[in-house]
Length: 237
Image (cartoon, rainbow, N blue to C red; front, side):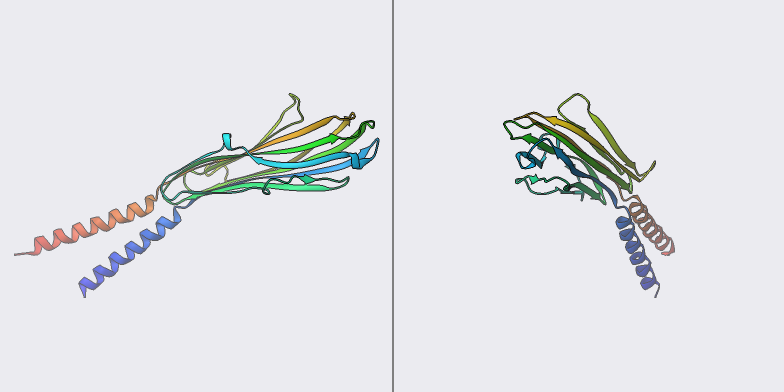
């Protein structure tokens, strides 16, 4: 009966240690949602103004490093090509997101995407006044041991006036961050002229998880076994 009780106690400790391992999950999530709206076009035949939106993964500036059971999943807005074509009054939303998790190990990853809104005046005679806008939402979350997440957005219209926005989350100082904002432009496009609004979104995550609760309970299990063996040795005549 005593032997059965000991076995039950060991099994209970083992089950608790496995639960502790699951509880050690660390996770980060990041997303950048961009909505473009072509508000108005004046000055000529709107059909001669070509407005397109496309997306490209910036492989050169993206990387990931995984150890243990770490993993990362990335979701792109849509598979390019083809680009999205706009009409006056139309909006289009593109969502770029990434998620990483680990129970025991480390994850360090950065994924970068490029959004390009191109406005081309294909007329040989007409000059256009074009009004358009960009609304964006950046979301970062980090939960669990050693978790942090950073989502950044940088956009510019072929000039040095670059806008930079960042959402940041850390498991100790703030597990969630959400930033929503927008911008508008009014451009004049001469015949044959093209302008491009470029937006670069980056999602960075870092996780460092070690299942310390499981290790502690396994240590206690081993210690209890050693003490039990020592007691049996002392009882031998």
